[in-house]
Image (cartoon, rainbow, N blue to C red; front, side):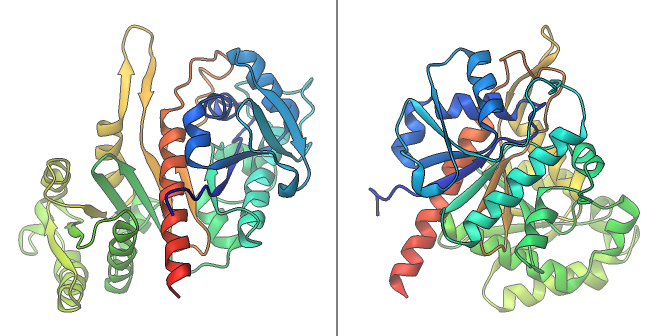
Length: 350
């Protein structure tokens, strides 16, 4: 299995953002070809522009089927959707054209994975306003994948080094997020997290569950969600043999996880999980007034296909300058490869 090289479909992201240039950087890196057979899904003209921008020696090979891909270092196979008029593309600007191109690249890579033409998918950053402006009313990649794979039980998992954070709710208002804290959903994400950790080689995952309220409600002083929903879910999962602790106040849970006490954490809502994750993985350069490093992977768990992604945005403010870090995309590809190999091993055992 060590010599198995899965085919990884990598979307270019919003063509007006940093997605194309970071994709070009990872495709120019020999280490990418040591672990997989990569191809970019998007527009050949956009990727040629990105290659010219960063000054790497890469030949663009437009293809219309996966079978046409050569997967050779020095040549970038691009599943060309031909949706971008490069003369009208404005870097760093929201547009219908860019939104449509970004969305259709995601749609196509899902289709290829569902048809088993590729083994896993990795997504570059899209701009939510752009895809909505183009008429595709989704709040993010997670929801797009769930819709086109007809998946009902799924969750967002963030990973940076030893920190793994899954979310009970994601792209909803904070007021609505509180209403979504239900026992069944918490049970669901604990089980999804446990399964994901096992895919990464952790045989008996230790899971910490965050409280929703300050101090995990202090026994009901600051809310009743812990008593009514979170604690019953934890008790039920421990009876099933899962190693779960909580509810733990969010202001201490993630510090303990960074120290290695837990293999994974359950966050109750979007920012509760994203803030500690980005504090750990993102680094701001105060002199240059931009991020000097953005590390971390966003994985959608529970899908019939594998989806890993960068967990940063389109960074319009630095797009077109060639300075964007490919670290997160490189990590996303590495995780997609791990999951594809695990899935292949599981299929061989059946």
